[in-house]
Length: 133
Image (cartoon, rainbow, N blue to C red; front, side, top):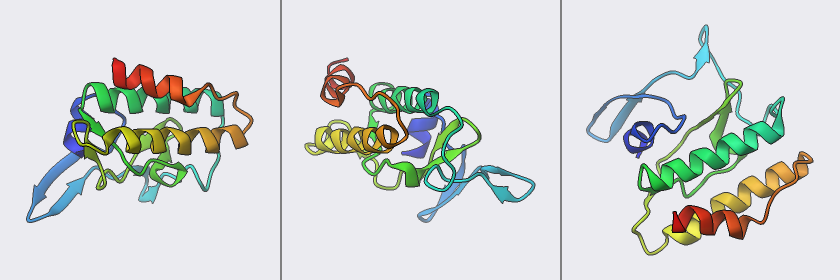
């Protein structure tokens, strides 16, 4: 999933190697200190971060063929731009549950960013745009 997202241009840690179910990936931080999760450090520009994450979700679906399936403020690092992490629950978009997982990911983002004061659009319309292409 991480490889597919990376190849789709989604901001994720770069996968380095995978062997026997162990994944090595790029460290996301500076001088040994990991970048903060969005849940711990609110973004400086919530509107821009929200738009970047919507674009990442769309690219993950349309170009990478996957849905994160557990996207929330807990699975986003701020570098200061957002980097999506923990794609272990990622689902192929052809899966029967992909549409529901995508809806949940979008709802989680909408809930978080609306609390930050971002004017969140109708997420059902965003969902349709992503699914219908």
